[in-house]
Image: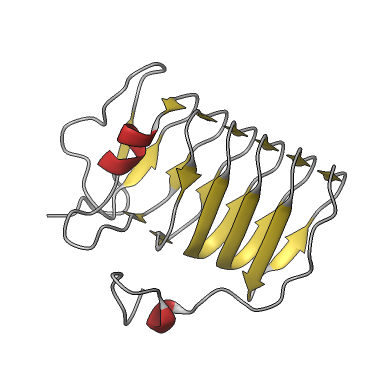
Length: 173
């Protein structure tokens, strides 16, 4: 049973497991939480092996291991402001009905961003390695962003909900 989108669940800083009752589709607030790969895996819907959220707050979060949000769906905003991605990251392909906020985020390793969203905000975001950004439908704000390495132009848009990779759910988001 999914929690209603208006529900909010928080983790205190330093907690290594999601709280009891966290369910796919719930709004979550993980601001300041250090994330490891096992904690990211705990956020997956066991039926689809993808993540579904209402509003997601990962502001000032540190992703210590490889961060990925493949096939994630956000019914509202996905906020990663001032988040630190210490290693390689693959954010997407994901679908966000609102905006994806990466303002002030720091990417320490190579990253691929693949989003279908209303807006992508990357003000003062820093990429310390190669970055590839693939967008569909989004307006983008890269004000004062720093790309330390050349980044390729998008060659193809992220897959739509019905074109997701094998093993993921197809159809509507």
